[in-house]
Image (cartoon, rainbow over all chains, first blue to last red):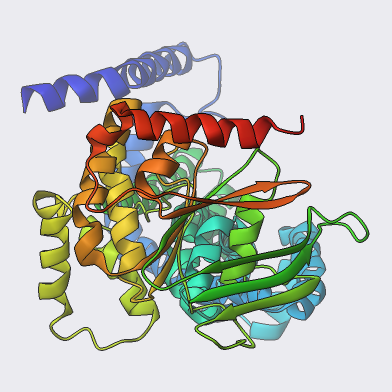
Length: 255
Length: 244
């Protein structure tokens, strides 16, 4: 326990100190009264606003954003793994799909979102579409690259045992691609939160993105910051969750 | 068991690394393949396993000329290539999984083999927890578990230190009688070749030479200190350097 604590402080201690220091300076600067609170609210004001809107934030808008994030992530994961594997198996699919994938990432999300709203209306699907657009890419690419990565010698060894392509895929390529796929998932899950928020900004009736937009319209910067901190925490929590899963999977399997 | 007739192969057209090369391996024989680096020993193995196709010539296995040789021969490459995410037991099981053979009752058989290979206590260990010698034994056992009679071993002890290597020699000589396999073995170590083999093929750019080892079995690793082996080694060295 003591050793764990020591390791933890070594790992994160400096960061925690920096955060405390930054917050203190921030609080002090704002309290000097030079900066109006609708431009930069003090940390204590943000906390106060969070307390005030607590029920609204945690019970109405957070669940809405979470729902979009999870559905968007689920679809991105399923489609990403499927298309990554398809591109690996078929050169034709790869040649056709890869350019489209890259193009899809060059589209400014903000610019295409109104189109999604035209297509899907103000329903949850317009937010999921934005989420998918940003979160799908890292999973396809990491799956595809992970499967390509090699293990050429292992594959040849299995060939001499009489293994076909499917067996090699199962026994060698999937396990070898796993670390890469998990990195892709880590990135993707954070993008999902960003995607859902952007979707909400552009047209929604609930969600943390919608909340922060409404509050910014009212010049309530403290409430906007409260929502942003919550979103950031959500992203971090999801990232840590996937990291733990990754650690568990890879350590157990001795990579 | 294995018969190679007038084999020609080159990575580039018109520049073969060997030409019209023939050799034979009889059932139950231990045959070593020696020769300078770049003479095509490993390429020869890849041709026999079916990973490569010859430009000319025939590779006859068990009297047949199979369309696709993959899956007919046990092959142990230079690196042990144990899968790091599988335990020793699961690594050894791999050929059975690939071969889709009935695994019922095989666990018992594998445990008996692990015992014989001195790996019984490491059944659930991962490859990176093993020493070099143990990894090679595990890889060798995996090759045996392919169930094929002809095993091609590409410098299996090449990466081991000389003491470990010597231990592996006495271990291999000890189990050779009960293995009942046919082995082709690539090595750079002449002493090793003589100690383990019934016959040695010397591969060079200019052709292939056969060298018979008339030492009775079972053999003891102590043989390397005896005059007969030393004089054979001299003869072999002379054969290697004859032209150059």
